[in-house]
Image (cartoon, rainbow, N blue to C red; front, side):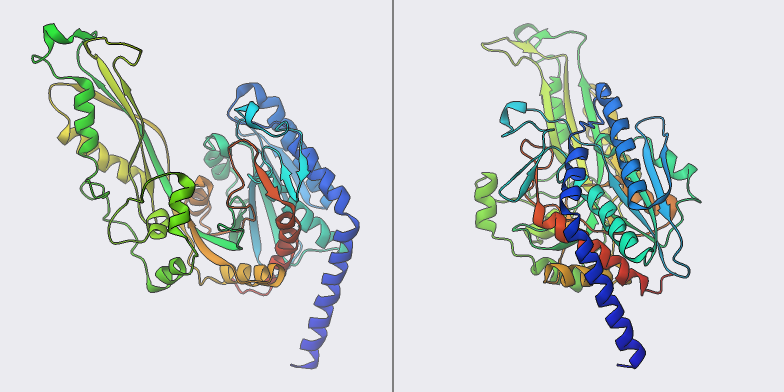
Length: 473
């Protein structure tokens, strides 16, 4: 190594020691700030909590100012506000857009919580509170990482733009319009989305893919009113029976979707993809026991993890119609209903898939009934190749701080903003999250490992150093 290279390495080591000292001396303040954010019941899906969502946005904005970020703004969207901030003085270095969300899910059922959901408590190394892992931990971690770098170096190694949203848990209904209106201001080389988790067993992991979503309700109608099954049985079709026939025509007994064209655009797994899946330590026996089923089921020709992360699905989420009370009521129901969702994978388009399903239903629906379809939400999938420079920089940062190379995982769930960044802003994403895989997101007793929280702050700071050395664009 040259003398200049040795000097640079020494400088970096000293800078990291300064950061570590700062983080050591500010640990209590950091904990209290995290708790203060968790105390705000920013439930975006409940209108009565709109003031709390605004309070959370104002809190995050104030925290970003304290950290040293600039141009901090609580931006109106027509719904809950988006918090924007930036720091853009790293000349010639990459610009990264950082995304998290400050809103949370409802806390019901309250009686199952060990402690009140908005009274954060650290118990046995875990932060227990609604939003502790999804996703207020990531908001706090990114702010504290930026603060640590700015306080110890007076600068950041890269240019950062923060977008902290308030409607992720209620379908981000206003975000795309806001992204479109702010497209120029949000220009970046790539985005980092922190709203993901490690692998089972708290093994450090990078999420490389998220599934998209198509969600709709199918309503089937027969007569104007329920009919006497003795008087009319055998003369008219039963909407519940008809609905069951339609649903059965959507999916075969082997788990494959029967809709023509459904799989046409699915990205095939590469040898590197298959190797990444094979590296994940899934104990299928424990997995079966943990979820309480008798056996696993799914599309033939793929492993369980491949089916969970890289193959599309179609599932009935709810079905109802007719009499459901105690005792008999001999009727032919007037109507029946089903909620159906599809999880989509790389290269599939939600609009196209919905069209294919609607066309198929039109072909298989009996002429003896009427039906309608209500769209309830959708989002496109995303995939970031493992070997991109930004992804490999994240792997190096995790290895340097957590002491192991990360696993590469594909999440079965959806984060619609990932596809929005790609389609509206034209930028790829790195999914860098630190929540425990079993952190009980959306459920009672949501929790976050404080060790992940603390080490994750150091990982983020290390990541900005790694990114500063990349040649992007």
